[in-house]
Image 1 (cartoon, rainbow, N blue to C red):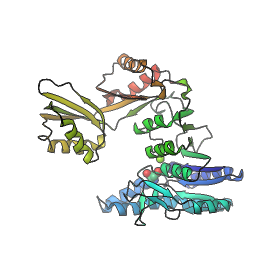
Image 2 (tube, rainbow, N blue to C red):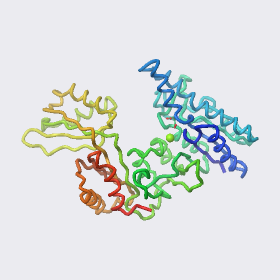
Image 3 (cartoon, protein in one colour):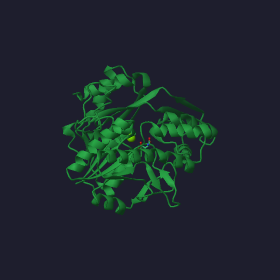
Image 4 (tube, rainbow, N blue to C red):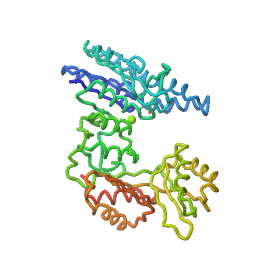
Length: 402
Ligand code: ASP
Ligand code: MG
C-alpha cells in the first residue's frame, strides 16, 4: 500500500512529538507499505514568522512573506528526516521545489496545478520514507509560494491524488469530526463517517478540522480521507462520498462567531441595487453570507447580510463610500452575533428538520435574526451571547449526544 500521512503543527511541535510521529510512520513502513509524510511547520511557527515580518514591515510584499513562511515547513521536514535517521529508517525530506509542486503565481493564496511524482516514486522504490513540506509550492517564476493558512492538508490530498495513494490520513490534535465542538458540548459524539459535502459545510462554519480546499480537492479526485489524532489510537472520521450517515437526519451542529450583520436601509426599490451593493463587496474580496431582502414598501426596501467580523470594517467603509450610488438612507451593523447551523445530508428531503431546530431555539428562548438554508444546512443568525446555549439545545433536540 502507498499511504500519505499528514501531520499538523501541533503533532510536530517539539522533539518528543517529532519522534512520536516518526515511530508511528515506522509502523507502516515496517509492514512493507510505502510511506509519504506531509508536515506542517512546528507548533505556532507560522504565526511567529508572520509576527516577525510585521515587526519589520506592517505590509510586507507577498513574495517576500512567502519566502519567509516556507521556512517553517522546511524546518519540520528536515528534523523529521533526522529523527528517522536516529531510528535507523531510511528517509529523505523534499521541499516543494524539489518535487515540482507547481502552483498559480498568487503568493499567499496559490493553488496547486500539478506535481511531478517521479522523484517521490523513485525514493519510495528505494524503500525510503519520503517527507514532504506541506503548504509550499513553486510558481512559473520559480518562486516559492504558499497555499494559504492551513494549506498543508491540501498538499497531502494533492499528493494522495497524484500518487494514487491507497490511503490519505490527516493527523491533528482532535481525533475526528464531532457532532459539535466537544469543548462546548461535552457529550458530543465522534462521527465515524461524513460526506465531502457535509465536511465542506462544517469547515466553512468554523469547524477548522480540515482546510476547505483539501476537501474540495478530495471530492474532485475521489480521495478518501481519514481524520485522526497523532496522540491517541482512537479510530478517526472517514470523509468520503455519500457516507452512510448512520441514518441521521442531522450530522452535527456548528457555530461561527466570526460573523457580523450589515443592513443597508431604505434603498430604492428598483432593479440593479443588489447588484451594486454586492459587486462593490465582491470586487474587494469581501465574502457575503446570509442575505435577506425585505419586501419593498412603497419605493424603498432594506437589504441585510452577514460578513466575517474580520471584514466588517472594510465592508462598512466601502458601503459608506458608495452610500449615494447604492441609494441607501442608512447603513447599520451589529457585531455581537453568531451563526448556528445544523448540517446533514439526511435533511435533503425531510421537511420537519427546520421546524425542529426552530422549536428547540424557541424553547431556549433564543431569538432568530436571520435564516439561511442550503440543501444540507440550516443556519440561523442569533445573538452571540445565546450561541453556546443554542448549540447545546439544538444538539439535544436532534439526539446527537453519545
Ligand atoms: N504552517 C501553515 C499554517 O500554519 C500551513 C499548515 O499548517 O497547514 O497555516
Ligand atoms: Mg491544519
